[in-house]
Image 1: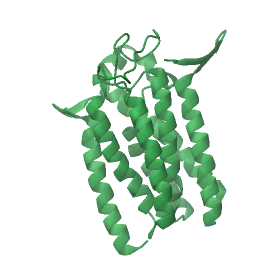
Image 2 (image 1 turned 30 degrees about the vertical axis):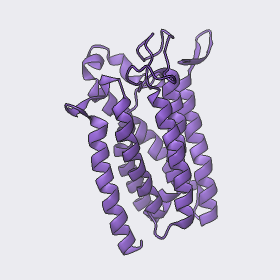
Image 3 (image 1 turned 60 degrees about the vertical axis):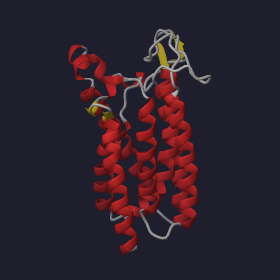
Length: 253
């Protein structure tokens, strides 16, 4: 596809990095709009976004490096090249949540209401981010002869070249767009704070577990034969989401 968006002399803008930046800015704008409607302080919503972004990127990269350690142990400089792709979404969640919890407690915010404001933004941002993955060629699918298969030919692409593959990046992007629409509907009907966020987690756990069936990049790691690392995390996240939805609904926080 198009790993490099713009290249003028020494200036190189990678499509993946551009899409991640676009995803964050759009997500921030949507969150601020919702915050205004709910009477929440915009500056604190913005702060949470930046804490989540930076801690999430660190976590997403750390998990990617851990699952691809043989390569990075031989090429340590590659560890910082996040603009070329290589972020594990679940790693971002694992690192971002504690940062958000810490900030919300420090500022005396209503945690679940605040996270609900951000939940649809995470979904739409993730949808855009996966388009960046598609352009970079990371997170590619298994070989297939389906009519919508994609064949990567750019030598800078991270995908297998010259082989028709499942466009798993587009599958996930489309699924996250649907998740975004579902969350907007739930937000209008929600009966307790935290409902929107944990429905996002529940929906994404299902999405990711299914998408993994079509993934072809073995670098993502496996917890056991036939079950990828992300599928294992999806199972845990699904159970966690169900438990929190049940608890929060009972307590009506």
